Image 1: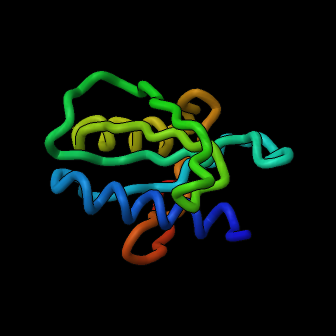
Image 2: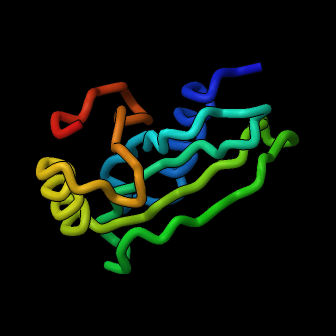
Length: 114
């Protein structure tokens, strides 16, 4: 079975392919310990074609037939919202108890504000 990080990369790659407005996708650390594959993979998707609506998670069930054994959540935000999120994190203001971690997709790069 592939790791959660490998699955996050796979989901991110699919998102990049489906939506040309996606500029970056980050793995979100929720602080929860994965248990029996029930804790979802959470991805923060920066989308220049998105609608500014705040942090609204969209959850998906595991898709074993498509090679994704974990449930996952995608949070689609605009670049402007991402800028505000970075400011909040820099000022140690938690957002739903989440921390933005690694950029996933084409490569892995740590986000400077974590």
